[in-house]
Figure (cartoon, rainbow, N blue to C red):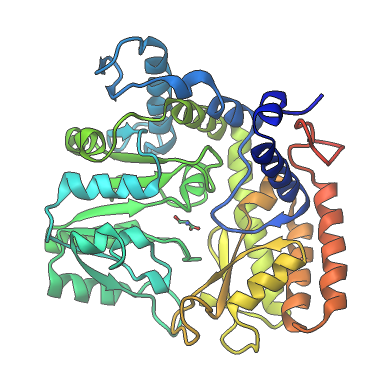
Length: 435
Ligand code: DSN
């Protein structure tokens, strides 16, 4: 029987593409730092009949009837998120009271809603420059955050690739932002939320942490919690947190009324209740002791990979990593980030090109690639595999014209992925063995 009989019969074209994507995910090594493999339980919730339900409003205060079951789901998601991210003192007492909105469709919507809630069009915001590891929604001129607000960037130091907190303070004192964003899409070092808060307090600005990349590390205890330092925290749920694609906002209670209104009706209509159900499942999974082990392993694997890449002669921005990702700096190599992405892709390794501080090749070509360990760690790979993968990456990048190396690497990567299968019991799987 076909793995998805209804889809296969109704729409063979979409069915074929979905099957091919499953096989790509199973056979190739996923090192894109923002991707992961959601569990079967998360996928089932995301594919459930909850997709049919309109539920504008919040639990018990909806604009539609028939919301009694989706109310259960949304309350579970909110409660679990709150438990996961509430900072506790040594006696396990809450340090601050946080509220949660699980409705943002994605990280971009979460950030837009926070800006709408807390500041006015034309106000000044500060975020890490996109070309230095920041995100489009932190004030890029091509995003609404840079069009509606007066965006002023801060940077990493070119000497060591770390956020220059002296510059952050200097810019903040000169530009008087209403809101400072700390968070990144391509920053391999830990964020110092307390230092950001001290600067925000000096200029009377809100501090928003966008922890989309590191949310799973925060939940798993391998990165500092942004609370109580930040007024607001946004995240996605599908990166290190390993849930469905989606966004979320958490904040000190005092800000929640404005934030809830900014999500709906401010920026969104009906919430995606099937995705909210999948978020609830992912938060439940992240509350289990095994998730702490996972978060630790993600960071340990990244560290081992970073060490090995450098031993093999490749440079990393900032000289290593504290989290789940690293940026290979190809500025001094003949190969660009764009070509490295293509070459590694042909060798079965999926990464993305990325600008590096002091970029000379431009944003479409770039001099870097971003490499992350969340997905390979979900497959069960550990330190030995991280070092092996680093060796394979180095071999491909340091011999760019060598087709035999590409072919040998592809074979070894596919063998490795067969040894650490993902979705092995999935209908239509091409991998057998352990799940
Ligand atoms: N596109 C995501 C990433 O790859 O980091 C951020 O939104």
